[in-house]
Image (tube, rainbow, N blue to C red):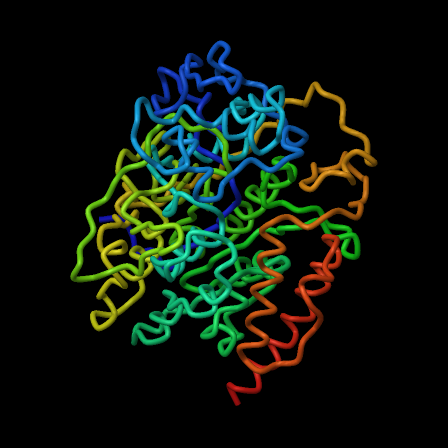
Length: 481
């Protein structure tokens, strides 16, 4: 049996599919379920099929955000928004992006994929530790419902970003940990904001939240909680001179690579922490980008129901598109390829198994009960002593777009080194967080910090969320005394 895991660390990034990030790393020596280069999608104009390509850029490919709302994902998988099986699956990505971007010429961009030299951090960790061949997003829809499944195996009946009560009402695994007698601790490391900031239970448990800047120190000093959930920076900040590193299109993938490397280096600096840790790097959903593997259909169990969506009608018996998932630990042999099926409910079930006592082992619902735990990936009895190094990334051939052009984009690229962020429009996710904050303040009877209708720029959103979070922290700290 492998040594005990005392620390589970989950870093959840944004909106990239498995094939988009890792598909072209497939080889005879590393036979993942990736790409051969012959995969295609239907053309939006009735012309020749559109193939996958090896020319993804860190940013600049998606001035229009690819569709990842429920009906768009249906179109990408089934070729129609109703989700009706009618022919080959996974061929509607280009057609859907043509509708989103209103451009047949831009539509093939969703078929652009990275090669290993362009993603040296993610690829190296996947090859030197373990990669999951079949980790699917929990919902064929956008970020917030998928992140909710990662925290509570439910989205409280929501498949979109705007069910404002859902994050507030969700019962999470953090609440279960508090009820357990094991003494397991948890920490939520944030750079700017989180949907968890607006959860009713966590509002009153503010000790859960830590600044991401504290993660390195906590690792160094052995103060790391049992369960750590890390959130990237979702938006550029001109006031903090910081770039988004979530990898949400069209933010810079290279910035996210740097964050992944940073988390790994922090964990490996203290052998006492590292030798009993398991790191999961996973993406919340595919972001409308191509993957060739059809999502599985599950069998519901009426005895442990999941609240269904009524508009659109959906019972959560179908998973979303496959995403990258990499498991990192000194208790994992190199070149481990995990064939088992997982989704974000696996996070909840694994936390429950590792850190909860017998009284807290009942799953939230059938979705959690059906989700495999991933602790079995640990295949060593003694920790490895090596720490991997990352090669330098292959340089990008294309010239950087101008700062003026970047400022006009809804989603923005990482700027060239040493260039400060510029004022931009907020992403759909950040605006959803603003509305979630607005809802939570009202539900708790707290003063308004403004209205979401007056948030026009990413910096407006950052400032709104900072003010809202300060009020929520004050309320939580007051309620705990």
